Length: 185
Figure (tube, rainbow, N blue to C red):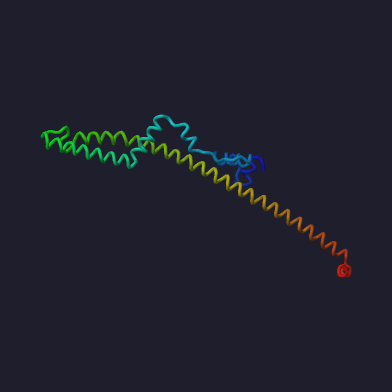
């Protein structure tokens, strides 16, 4: 079996042209006895733009405990500094209910949310590519196993034929010796 058309017909039970692009690719790899595994993460990371890398970095930092700790620390310092200034000077740069802080937090959320969504979209695209590659590898492994089973069945069938031929030959030899000759020897 050398041709992808033969692989498709014999193992997948359909014409090569009826297969989807990934199955055709797998049939070609099986027919050519080439490996299909590759590092898709490296391929995906090789073509990233500066904006995509920045979005990934923002999402990675924004979803970390360091960010949560810094965020909580900034809030405590902001409120504490305003309370200290009110008690010592009677005035503060952002009086309660902290409208300036709310503005900064709203701006941070307005910028951070779409950047994180861009990163998540990119990650879901990478996950889709990984899933497609896993499908290809699994399909190729399944086809290779089917080919191995076929080869084993052929070997077993050939061995049975040889064994039957040997047994037939032995029976013929025993028949030529005859019943009396076999007992005296």
